[in-house]
Image (cartoon, rainbow, N blue to C red):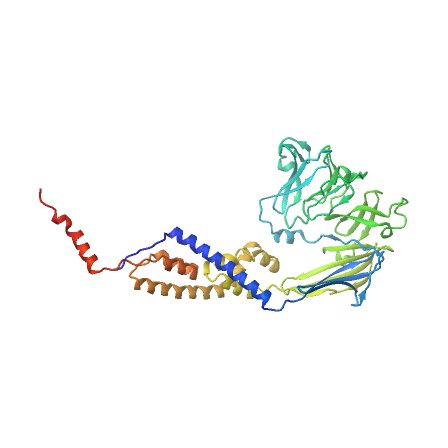
Length: 490
């Protein structure tokens, strides 16, 4: 006679199986790293990037790293090594975003409900400021200041200035709140330092050795690029909000510092050697606003580049270098194209595919590697539908639902193989249980079918056979059965 007999319950089996699956994955990845590190030869990591001097000399910076050696050097665009002089001045590269907002919204990767970024205030005893916004593409946000000691809210700051409560959504700042906040920026300057962040971020902390006091608008204010293309000047001491630019077509902005030799000859008559300013990007122009001279330099973007994101560098002689990085996610090709232009936007020279490297995403191969780490249908499918979704969305330009369906289609062959393997393991478990004279529960079969070898090992370990009947136990059992009949009649 067989009977169901288990050491562990259903819930305990689930916990133990999940733990075993995680432990197995960690061990497999750890062993793989050891094998790749110590048994296979290490490849040389050679990275390249375009850089330039303010005199217009364009170079390629090479960085080579290997566990046994490293090297850094510069070459010309023709590949010849270039030796830098000691008094060389590099041109600052500024990345400016453009392009189709609908594509960015569809490819948005943020999954958080609320995002928070912090910075130190500009008060004499600085407050702890935070910018809080909803993590969705078309978002709104507001500032809040906390006392650094009491941790109490001092005030909130929205479009109506300081207030004691959280601003209603209609009075918050409209922003783009996802895609790494690439379309929403706050530019804030602290004394003689400046920072350009691609997210809502920070003022460098005050240094006691600093004595320089700014005289421009960033002494007490910051600039906020809103979703409607306007730039707001926010005074963090008074709470005053005012429009910085009389236009609503700004796509991006960034802080930078240009040498006076990179600006027109009549730009400044002062003794300063450089000018701190903000570079603004519209659909068809880039212009530099000098914070100290309060002057503007307008540059027309060449028509071929007006719908692209690029980085820009200013050279002497009123020349501009545009750098466009292109990445084909289907083929994995990464390339850099260069365009030389003047202020009116006339291209004088181009250089295509300057830096080319291939980094294809082989998802059809990766799925079999995932199966080796998680050789069970349910755990494999869970990993495939969570980890690579964003990459599939970006590579094939799909929605989240489309990316999930694409992953299901790609995973189907592996899933069929894993289900067959789990079925074989299930039949073996059934045969083993019958040998032990145990009748498994229905959920054990389903569990093995879903979690494969992990469930099999846990359930087999928890099997407990009924005790074998010896002559002595049979005699004792007979006595127990007859005991009520042997009681004396009262």
